[in-house]
Image (cartoon, rainbow, N blue to C red; front, side):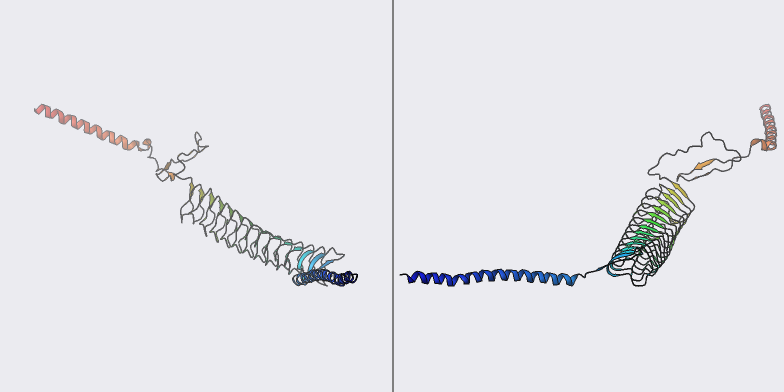
Length: 357
């Protein structure tokens, strides 16, 4: 009777260690699984990212990223953040580069600010440039004093200077043009060597290549202009179709829309294709009255002519007036004498007729 409980107790004692070992095994298995997962994450993470470095020196140069500067440069005050930071720098100073490829090729250029993927990528000696946006001033090499804000702004500029481009692809193709200002997406987009142009508004002066001294304000203003110069267009699509015409002025929405010639002034009028040296103000469909101040009761000295207007609204001067009567006194006197002699003869004939009857 007493041996049976002892056998049960012995079985319990015998089996208890086995249960504890199974629990410990599960714990150890879970721990090993977590450790393996952490190890895998550590391995995979390190395969996708590389620990970079930080550089600073007593000349106020500082950088963080992969390859930073080089061992021989003498420039001061340069700051960079990116995979490779100004690795070709020699004597350039006070440059700031943020982004992969920003100011990648700079050597002696100074006072440049590049923010964005490959902004000022090819700049070597150009100075005082500001580029913000993907590919902004990407191929600039020697150009100076340029400002580019927006993707591809002044992207192909090489030596052009003092240009300002704000907006997507503004002055994108500019190469050597100087002193241009482009504000708005695709303004002066295809300009290559044209200079002293001002474009404000989406696609204003979009097609200009070498035209100079143009001012375009408004969406599509001077859109098709290529080589025309000294034009002024203000308003939606003003002078849109002008290509090579010069010295045109168009003010108002659609003003000068049809103009392709030169020296035209179109105010609130679409103009005419091919004409030059013409002034057109308003349109018959919209304007029915004209008031001009400073004319009434104002005397003009010297020879004058009457102003006339035709059915098309064209103004001009009337024909010369007839000569004054006093200059024909002799002719009038002779005519009077002749009339008098004829009257006398008629009277004599009348008397003879009556006497014969």
